[in-house]
Image (cartoon, rainbow, N blue to C red; front, side, top):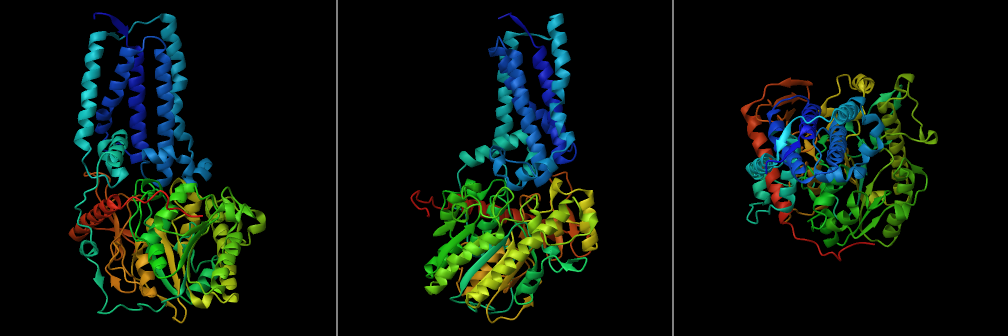
Length: 620
C-alpha cells in the first residue's frame, strides 16, 4: 500500500472546479455573499476526484476532461437560465431546457460573451498538459492508502453536509442555493421529490388559509353572486400581456385598442399580478383553473401530472357544462397531455386540430386561426343549447415577438427599430387585433350576450436578460418612470358579464384569485373546495405571493412589494409601487413574510396529498 501516484490532474482540476464554482455563484447570486458554502460543496467534488485517482489507472486525463466539459456546459446553462428567470433551475428544468419556451426562442439574446468564461480553462489546459507530458512531471505524488482514506473522509463530509440540510424548508430555489450551495440545492430537491413524503395530517382547510392570509370580507353578503348564473364561460389567456400597455398610445396609435374598448364594457382589475412558477404559461393555466399556488421550482404539469385536481372544469362539469381547452401548440409541450386530464378538461384542441395554418414563430397557428377555428366549436355548442366552458390560450405574442411583415400594423417611430420592446408592442398589437375580431364574431353569432368572457395575461414578456438598456429607456419613456418589478409582474384581468355595467376595481389581486372571482359571478360556491385565492368582489386586504421570480416569501400587500432577502444576512426590501421608491421594512411586513411562507407550506402539503389520477383518465 506504499504505491504512489501522480496527483497533478487531481489538484489541477480541483482548482479549476473551485474557480468555476465561485464564478457561477457570482453570476447567479450577483456577488460572493455566503461564498464559504462553495468550499463546503467541494467535498462532493473532491470525493469524486479522489475516487477517480483510486480506481482509474489508464485514461485518467480523459475522465477529468469529460467531467470538466459536462460541468462547464451545466454551469453555462445555469448562468443563462438565471439571467432570464432570476433564479436557480432545478434538475428537472435543466433536463427539459427545450421546453423552456421563452428561453429556447431568445437564446441568442440571452447568451452573453462573459458566460463563455466557463470554457476558458480548456484554452489554458492545452499548454499545461503538453508541458506535463513533455517533462513527465511527477508533482504532487499521492500514496494510495492516503487516497483511500481521503475518499472515505470526503464522502463522509458530503453525506454529513446533505443530511444536515435535507430537512430544511425548500420553498425557494434561490435562497436555498444561496445558503446551502447550488449543487446541494439540487440534491435536496431530488430528496424532497422522491424520498420525503407529504404530511397526511396537514391542517389544510379554507378557514385556515383565510386566517393565515388575514383576508377581510367586504360587507355581510356576497356582492354579485350568481349574476352570471348559467352563462357560457369563455376564458382567454393572452401570451406575455402586461398591464402597462393597456390604454397606452404610440404616436397617437392605441397599442391595444380592442382591449381598451372591452374594458369600457367590463369589470377591469388593473392591480392583478402574476404568480406563476417554473411552468410559466402552463402554470398560469393551472392557477386559473384551481386557485392553487404552483410548485414554484418545478412545473406543475410535470411534477403533479398524475394527480386529480379539484378544479373549475370539474365544478362546471357538475353543473352540466361541457369543458374544453384550445392551444395551437403541440399538447405534449409542457406535458399538457397529462395536465389537461389532471385539471378535468373533457376535451382539448391542439396543433393536430389547428395544424400549422398561418404559422407564426416556432410554435403554431396564428391567433387569427386559433380564434377562427375555436369559434366553430363554440358555435356548434351554442346551436345545441349546450352550456360550455372554453379556455383559449393565445400564442402569437410569444417571445421573441417577431412577426411576419404582413402581420405588423403598428407603425412605430424609428427609435423602436431592432428593439425587443418594439417587437413586443407590434406582437401585442397584432394579438389585440385578432382578439377584437374574435369578440366581433362572438357577437355576430349570438354567443357574446350569453357568455361571461374573461381575459388576462399569463405572465410578463419583458423581463430578465431579454431586454437591453435601450428597451428599458423606451419603456421608462412610455411609463413616465423607470421600469420596475411591479410593472413587470402586473397583468390585466378583465371580466365581461352580460347586463353588468363597466367598473374599474382597484383592489389588489393575483392569479389565484381569478377562479374564486369567476365562480362568485357564476353562483357556484367554493366552500367545499380548497382554494388559496379570494373573490375580488367581496374580499380585500389581500396578500399576493410569488415564489419563483422573486425569493419565496416575497409578497405584495396594499401599495408595497416586499422583496425577501436571499439569505439570513441579505436584507429584505420594501418597494412602494405608487411612489416607485424603496421604503422602510416594518414589523408587520416581517409577519406577512412568515404568513406567506406558511401559505406555501399549506399549499405544498395539499398538492402532495392529492389523490393519484387513474391513468385511463384522458381526453380525445
